[in-house]
Image (cartoon, rainbow, N blue to C red; front, side, top):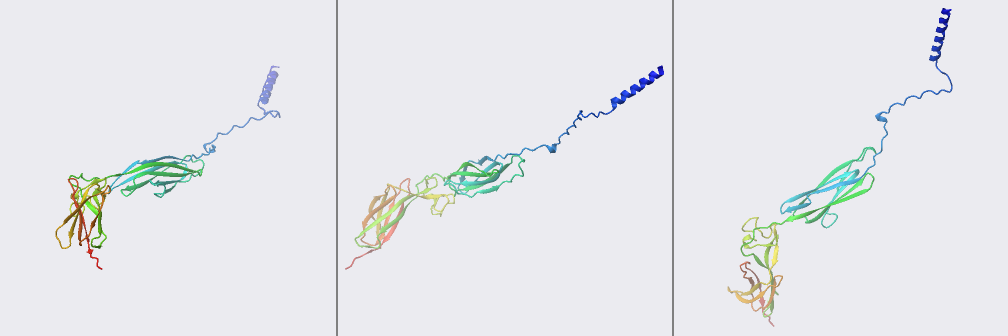
Amino acid sequence: MVKRAATTLVAVAMGATALATAPAYADDVAPSPSPTPSPTAGDTARTPYTPDPRIVSVDVDPDVVVVSRGGSARVTARVTTKDVQSVDIDLWGPRGRGDDGGDHWFGKRKGGPNDGPKFDRTSRSWSFDWSDRAGTYKVHVEAIGLDGKKYTEDRSFTVKRREWHGPRPTSPKATRIAGFDATPEPVRKGRALTLKGTLQVAQCWGDWYYDDWDDFSGRRGGDRYCYEGRDYWHDWHWLGSQDIEVYFQPSGSGRWQYVDTIETDDDGDFATTVRAWRSGTWAVRFDGNRRLKGSEATDYVKVWRWQR
């Protein structure tokens, strides 16, 4: 009896175990979902980069260019751009556009929309010497962006000349009588003769005047002196309100005869009328003073007699 009961309990236990471990085949039970695999770095979605074209900066160094006679100076423009395909750098002079050609620089096109921003830097330099025009110059930059649009930027700089000044004069300044002429020539005896010319004083760069010791003929001194033909020679300047004496020396005579004294006008010009009686040389002379060195000029005139 006991043995049969034990056997029955074992059988019941084994059946219960079988029921617990048997798979369920009921149609109304849904299967468990499969787990989602983890994403990898290579499968991450890319966000396209939107170009932002512009000229970031234009720097000009120096902003004031000073040139000396016989020397030169250099100015450099440095340009930084973003997302552009080309840059053009031009120099515009004091008279406006077109003083200098452009610097056609082409940037690299981007490889794709996801490359990110691209910055480019380029520069251009110019040299200036004494022959270049002083004034305000402009660096004009034009860039074509990756969007096809044009962008511009300007920067200005100034070119100045450093004037050369020689030693300050301490003695009388050189003068000359320019363009002296006695007309008409030849002239009939007793007719009017016009004498005219211009009194001038030597002038160099900086509007300084120089005297004879600066050797305008070039026979004495060196390159540091100011005389015609030198780089720092400027011009002759008129002398107004100065007395000019008129003389005449007849042909065959060794003596000068005083004729008249006339005065230069505001432009240094003078003119007078005399009677011609004999052939000979007419002279005009500026005696000078403690500030101005004297000078003179001559012209020979032939006088002929009228015959019936």
